[in-house]
Image 1: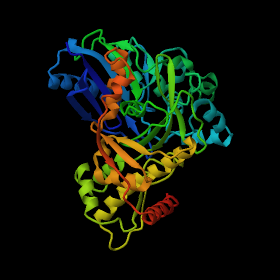
Image 2: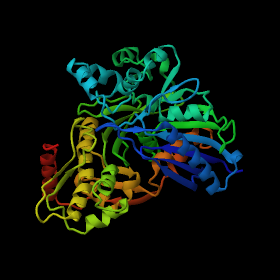
Image 3: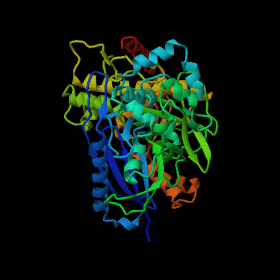
Image 4: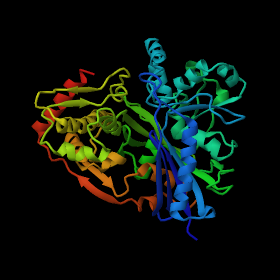
Length: 492
């Protein structure tokens, strides 16, 4: 009998459920978008109940589309937007506040205080991370400090914290499982990166009571079993979980030291496998847990740009420049160049390697002759150029140039953007047949955990290339683009 895997990808703008068989053929894929909540400038929230309802709905619709019986689903895998933070009541399962999203900047004042006290080197040494509102630690403390009685209840063990996969595990198992995986735990500012455990010194520094924390588990093991979730059978094991970017790294079969990928989603996320030892970045990148399999932990260097696909969404929803996201490529191709218009897509601050949480987006170099096509082309160039800063920092940390970069995510389907990325980086871009490698990574981890796939080599054989993009830009033209980009950065 064929074994099926239900893989769930709970992302920043929507929830996706995919049903795959044991040969990784896709039988169903359902996505439901949900609204973002912006209570104040630079604040970003989600309604956790809406996330839960979209999760149930997509599972049910995917099962119906695949025409698969519940008993045929052998395992469930989870992947998620990572640093987004939820605190809920252990008895009722109800969140005590909206989810605070990874893009949210409300805690930057507290982090600036810690930086002024000279604490960032200690934080970086312990966690691999920098002092930025991006991460979960200060989000947890903010909720506990701004919801009446929450901190007292937390100390009494009445509240639970989790990133999204932890919240979904709790709900999917009927409240019987409070766990996270090592990749998500490493994004909280609270985990000791070398030892894979919660760090008492970091808990004290960020004022997070240990009573709210989940157990840290590996990425391909039984994390819990389905209970009272109608689209699935009770007892179905949840055998794999990873943060979305680590799941994409796994889905791209970047199993060897030096393998790297870039996911083009809401933001752009570059990760490089650094093997079984964490690498301390000298260029303000992050060192993070990639995955833990059979007790062996692997690490990655990471650089994140907070806005990539979200820039195209803003051109659509904020400026009405396009009606749908797929119109951006033909509009950008309607002109031969951006005519030295520069777009810096720092709508949620600048991420690696700059780490400027208060940065604002920039459209610079406008003239009377500037049209919509120039702005669209410059926006795509800005998405690609911010990745150049990250990858060059990564190459300096690794001590060698990358021969190629694997890409995935929705925006990687944009051929013009991928050619720009190859041109600005000066290396080949490799796109797989299946660009939704985040959810694929969750499925592969679940398949490993359920013994559907015997080993990594059997998984590697499933990866198939769609297209390579080779650099096709002269050195002088590339240099001019990079110079204009640096001038744009000075204006954020």
